[in-house]
Amino acid sequence: MKVLIIGSGGREHAIAWKVAQSPKVDKIYCAPGNAGISQYAECVNIGAMEFEKLAAFAKEKEIDLTVVGMDDPLVGGVVDIFESQGLKVFGPRKNAAILEGSKAFSKDLMKKYNIPTAAYENFTSPEEALAYLETAKMPIVLKADGLALGKGVLICNTLEEAKEGVKTLMLDKQFGSAGDEIVIEEFMVGREVSVLSFVDGNTIRIMTSSQDHKRAKDGDQGLNTGGMGTFSPSPFYTKQVDEFCRENIYQRTVDAMKAEGRPFKGIIFFGLMLTEEGPKVLEYNARFGDPETQVVLPRMKNDIVEVFEACVDGKLDQIQLEFDHNAAVCVVLASDGYPEHYEKGYPITGFENFENKSGYFVFHAGTKFDEAGRIVTNGGRVLGVTALGEDLKKARENAYNAVQWIHFENKYMRNDIGKAIDEA
Ligand code: AMP
Ligand code: GLY
Image 1 (cartoon, rainbow, N blue to C red):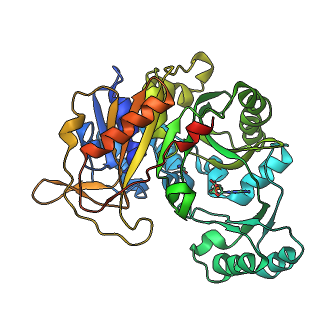
Image 2: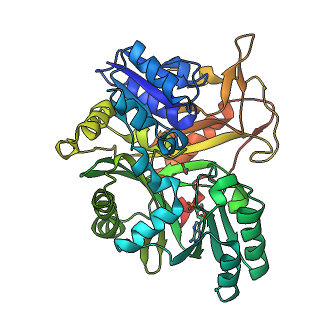
Image 3: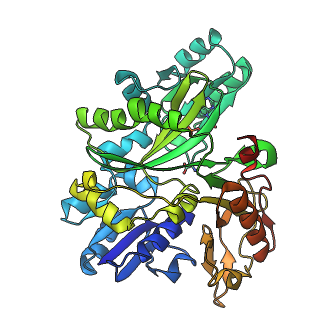
């Protein structure tokens, strides 16, 4: 089989690594890919939003299966373009990717189908949003409706901050048209858990749990980022939590999408908050998480290509997922200054330390080859160093050993990824 992967981050590197394990696969392409992905895949210089070019490439190379890693092309309808040309593709159509593409849509869906989530109101008028805030309880959360690189969520402690937030999102349009509509929702307190799942339109299969660290600095301080590190499984995702979510959240979401005439095929990522009143949905994503994928896939036993195909063919009921009884921790090595201002183009050394070492992975997020053929930094998040271990503590120890094997000029990381494990 020939497989094409669309995307260029650490998530796509982990997907490419996993796809490469499949005995069914002879050749992998990745568009546009990065320096690390080129170990497993031939990288092709086509952007993830160039749908017609991607489809033409898939036809020309007779690709058997395309896997879309990123949210923007899914929300933009890349799957519809591929399907209309008879190409096999893994991911939700545009009318289902809206589950991530519009927070107002997802909140209304949860309300209509009684899926537990924070109380909220949607607003298209800044005046009405401001009037609503006058009587609302603080802290409060403002969310841009559309995609905003994970940065369109504002947690406001005071009325003044909240009013300023409405201005930022709806009037100054910091995230462009993503702020044409906003969700204002109740602030929830609790631990966060990420749960990824495969869905074929009817059946849902849950993967092992994980937890992200979104803030830039130790102690969950600093700005929100794409994710600074993860661990899997989450010790807070207990059997009781799992049972509750299976009964009230997972299948109900899949059935709701079907009932709305938007059958969902692909990955649903459930961002959960474990509150005192029980688990509630913080957000849905319509794709693998980054860097959750970097700790979930190394623990997965199945041939991922078989699972992808079962989703596309509507046969997921024939698959049981299996995960190792171990743990994984991923520490992101970033460029100092991320997510604001940072330098790039620095040579990275030490990759050879990972060669032939089982249980250690270095997934590339923002890297490229320079003219001299060296691998250099090319983004805010540069690498995701993942290590396995027999339990979470061992995996964390292994990951923090392995981060020392890599060197580049402005290397920055959090030193407390997985600290929550000690409180479990
Ligand atoms: P989201 O993109 O919706 O996952 O939001 C980004 C982050 O903001 C989440 O991971 C939470 O840490 C935080 N957040 C979002 N919604 C709420 C809420 N209703 N209450 C408390 N924190 C929230
Ligand atoms: N790690 C969070 C996300 O992928 O959105």
